Amino acid sequence: MSDNTEDLQKQIADLTARVWRLEQALGERPASQATASPIATDSLRPLPIATTATPAHPDVPVVVEDRKPRSLENRIGSQLFNRIGIIALLIGMAWFLKFAIDNHWIGPLSRVLIGLASGIGVIVWSERFRIRGYWAFSYSMKALGTGILYLSLWAAYALFHLVPASVALVAMILVTASNALLCWMQNSEVLAFYAAIGGLITPLLLANGQNHALELFSYLLLLDLAAVTLIALRPWARLLLAAFVGTSFYAIGWYWSFYSDAQFALAAFFVIAFFLLFAIAPQLLRSLRLATQVGHLSVQDNVVLVALPLMNAALGFFELYALLSEPGRHYARPWIALPFAGFYVLMLRISRLRQLSGGPVALPAVYLAISVIFFTAAIPLELHGTYIAIGWLLEGAILLWLASQGEQKELRLLTVAVLALAFVAVNVIHLGSGHPVVFNERFATYLVAIATFVFATWRAAQASSAWRPVAIGSGIAVTVLTMVAVCLEIHSYWATQTLASGSLADRQIYEQFTYSAWAMLFGTALLIVGFWKKSSFLRWQSLALLTLSIAKVFLVDTRQLSQGYRILSFLGLGILLLAVSFVYQRDWLGLRSKS
Image 1 (cartoon, one colour):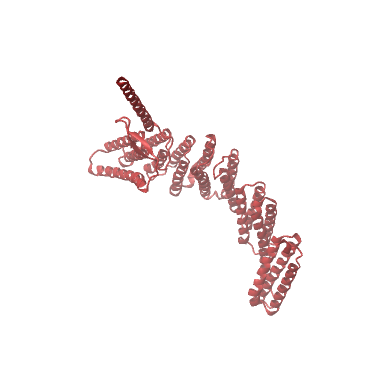
Image 2 (cartoon, rainbow, N blue to C red):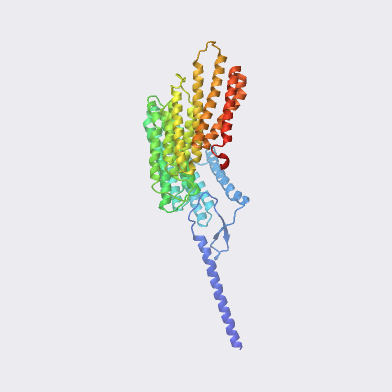
């Protein structure tokens, strides 16, 4: 019995040792994986906090990811103080260089070499933190090391004159390229931004107050091409915006500081080159999403797909417009909007070849809006006076015809915007005296506007229910335009009449009476047509006009008209209102039964 007990105890001890070894092995595997597994990607969002777990071996630190939401205190301590610390260190390095220069501690060459060695050392040291999982701190260290390198190279060129500008430029390009290579290898958007910022500040560091347009824009073009290449490899959408903003800063600054008419060809070439590059880049980003079968667009993608095409189109247009403002080139300015419109129509057709679902913003809609904007802008650039309003009216009619063929919401909204702009232009742009009455340019413009909005009312009424508000608005516009057009001709007529008495007050009396008569007549005509066509829409417009007539008779005519015309105005209004009331009381259309 005792032998059996001893055997059982040995077996239990053996099993216990085996279980302990298995537990150690299982506990060691996730720890080693947590140490060695790379993070697939990173962004500008705050990175997770790395905490140290109990290591399987005392010499190997283990980092695990803390997925708990970080508090405000934690964010301040880990992020805000981190950024402030980097800035403080850069300022300290700058002051150290200045202090070293003032006290002649070390020679210029030694200072530069120490700075270069320090920058490289910090970058290499940062990799140790990255391997251990401290990603945010590692990237911050790389930013610090890169800043020291740029500062040292700047000092070697501008401060100590140890190297020429070309050598400093090549060295800074190598630093930028190294950061770009690191960001690609480590799949880090943060490092990509550091590389972009470093590349963009290089011209500022090497600036000497002279005009080096060819070198500057060639460098920026290569830098932007590198950014677009990175977009093809890693779809970091916001990197495009950073490159565009930096390039625009230099382009605008150079134009105000150095541009002359002799540099027109060079400036025009680079304006077109940058415009085409940033116009194609969003389509490249979209195609990349399709090629990788992502199937949807992120918020960052949507911001870029809206902001970048709009900003690029606006900047490219205004830059070319400014270049063509020099004497001798004014003839080309009115026509530059049309090539831009045609280009974005082409981009619209290309973008519609393949559709990307799942995103709230569609790139074809952005291209469509830009092309319509340029077509609309081309009209006032090429035409003058009332022809501007006529051009917008025709454009609105064409857009309406195209939009009513389908159910594209964006094109419908653009159509409404162009028609509204044309309506305002017709009523605001009154070039010409309005003589002779009716047979003049102004009245002809109103006739074109009335015909356009009649067409818009008819076409929108034939389309789907989504077009009903457009039909209603166009119908009201027809009434308003007709009323205003005749009133303007009434004013022109009485302004040219010479009465026997020659009194200005008499002409004003006749003019006011004619306005009242026209409002009553037009309101009656609308009511008759409304009853004839059984259109409540026309009848309501008639009632609105009659209400205005009542207000004018009681508020204006009683004070301004003479006794005889006042009597005629009230008698006419009373007879008209009684007739309207009689028609409604007889209920010839059966309106009571419908209600």
